[in-house]
Image (cartoon, rainbow, N blue to C red):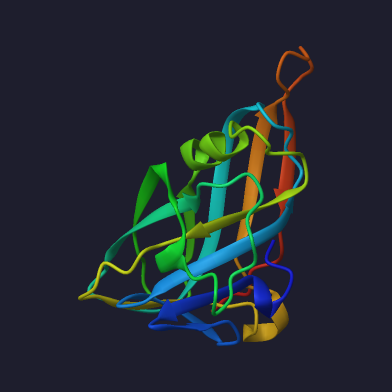
Length: 178
């Protein structure tokens, strides 16, 4: 899961990495998962990004991508979502109302990233949503409630050519109700 405030934030012009909200719509929310324990070339059975809505209007539809790199750099004022190379794979989410937990299927995104030459087990992975504009919503950031509602990913995979049973890696945290 997002382990510190530096691992999530949003871009609206500049980078905001210490906000209580990750704005989307006119801004680009982004998450960095600093250690994804999936080996290069694994077959991803399922991968879910879990984010909690802080506020929402118009039930906007936003699109998520991964950063198309084997070893994702930390988000910062010099490394913002607008400069990140997007994965070809993407997924959409119709953002639910406030205090709703959203489970986003990012299986194809994670598969594309772990297939990149140079990806290694425990490398960081970045997930983000480019600003589509015209909508107003926000997700809960790490800074809210001491990180208990920060974004998390859950990945189930089979290691390449091992013949071993499916393994499940869960980067998790508890979600607070309302």
